[in-house]
Length: 256
Image (tube, rainbow, N blue to C red; front, top):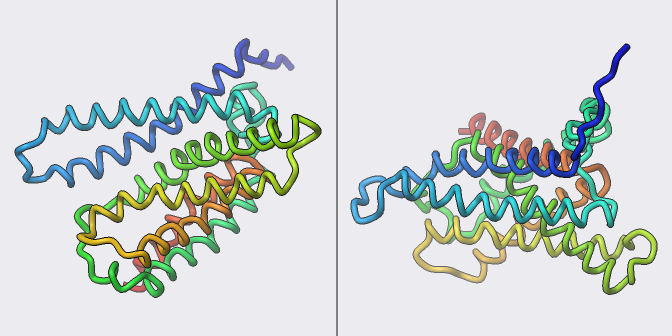
């Protein structure tokens, strides 16, 4: 039986695949949220100009994160097995099989946790705040599950692991678990901080309680996704992150 030959430039092809996947989330978030923010505001540029600017900015950030992961990930043992299987013309199912169960289990538990935290543990300052925009489930799944994982895990976490391995471990052996955990926690805190601007849109004043809640709650999930990336692969983190939003959304619909 004749088999297809491996692609000539797998790294370039892998980078393109990751970039396009990340851009799906950027576009999905832009076309669903930006029109809501601009609704009734005639003092801003046309919608298409704002959308284009957002897509260009998002493309630059995603491209940088993809480049970091491609350059540094293989040196510290961090991979995206599913995407790599496509780039190398290998079995995607075989690459994803070890990641599916951990990703699904983590996503299910995290989704219930996200629902519980949002509904029963949020600070008083956030309770009763009328959202100025809503993010549809599809945009949450695509942007959170794919784009954010590319930015925070594939890009930021990989860079942090590599820096510790390069300068503290002097490139000796595989990165130590302690250094990887530091990178997981640090990237998780960045993940939490990245949610502050979205919350700021809905609030008139900030309180330390709100900042700690937003960073802490999202940081916990970031640690979980970072662990999955380290131990199983990028797709496990993506599956868990996407499922977290889906489960939380479903639970909220059932309760309300």
